[in-house]
Image (cartoon, rainbow, N blue to C red; front, side, top):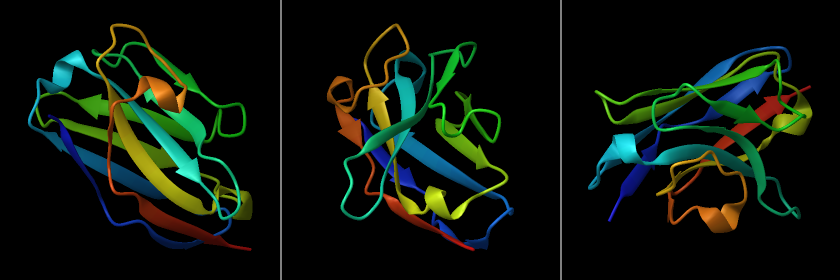
Length: 124
């Protein structure tokens, strides 16, 4: 079993930056594809970004491409999401997730382990 704990999100002004982290325990972190998803009120959970075992392959939703960066530190069992140029539309609860897959995947059903979520609010 893998346990995932996200850092506290926060309130940031539009155009600002925020970095989320997600610490994993209970599994071999380096064998998991890691992803970030988000869910805004009244909307379905949507993919944000994912990274392969080594971090050498990353994949982003079009809505965040060029603004967000996913990275991982396997020595620290942690995955990060650096969010720049934030917009009000980025306001959501952000979740990190782990998939025991050797390829980068981006649908929620592929991920077997989820964090509790952290609120990110961007004020316009």
